[in-house]
Length: 191
Image (cartoon, rainbow, N blue to C red; front, side, top):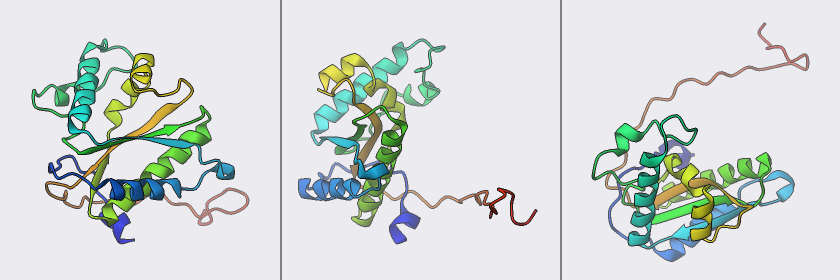
């Protein structure tokens, strides 16, 4: 429970490299995620070269600014990323793409579970992580898939970064979730 309670989205990393064996252990944790009928529909593309990650980030940023504002891919984050020093991947030393090897929704769902396992394992190992949703659509582009050798039938579900945090973000308050205890009649038990 400690890793769950203390996990935060880290958006500022040190330049300290992450041991490849540690990254491998995170991928093993991701692979232990539940999936429908134990289909394990995920694949992981892992980048650990800082210049490569920076180049991909620059391409994502340039693409965001070239998409017309009324297009579905247009990002409401444009004002945030317009800063000259904004790094899409926050200077993280590791970029991991969690890909679905199927177009089925259950495959995408399982990939999200795998990503969560990875992020919790990272936190337990003293590493920070963040899901970089702003980059997801760029990875769906046919030219991006060709460049990164992603098969056409695969889709990037979660681009996430991992590394040693500059500092741990402070705890944020959690809203109470809506919880209903239901009966077989599908009515709340307290109604």
